[in-house]
Length: 166
Image (cartoon, rainbow, N blue to C red; front, side, top):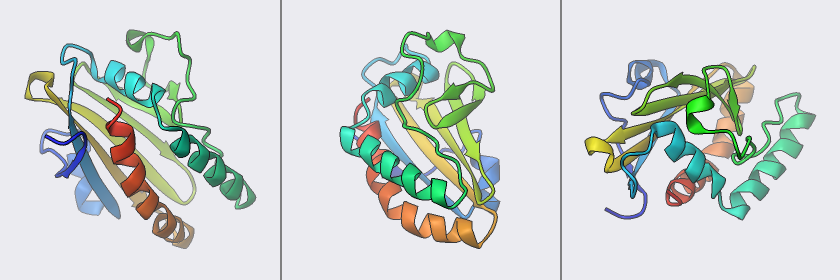
């Protein structure tokens, strides 16, 4: 399997029931070199190694959206570096996302703003030998549609680049 490749949102993904009403959804998979780690540990280890160009892109995004009255989310790797994966709870912030669900095999993260809701799943598959990161977006208004028109091309570069750091 290539480092990170596009795939379908898995049927067992907890985001699957929301796909019918989504304005955007995609998923990428990668081999997992340490199958015994929890889904949260995999997420933390992966975003800890976010490419510098992705962090710079997030900085630029934040500078623009602040002027539009949207949230400055920070960066993917903005989280407590010494906090253990098992210490995270639903409602905690991890980088740009809030934890919505935690299980050994899947973590759901997300964020909501006036223009859209985004949810992300990191799901361990094949006894942990593979992970799939799925993203589902529900747009609320014209600003959300305009935002997604700009973000989609970047997301399609960023998601596999980050997942390739697994």
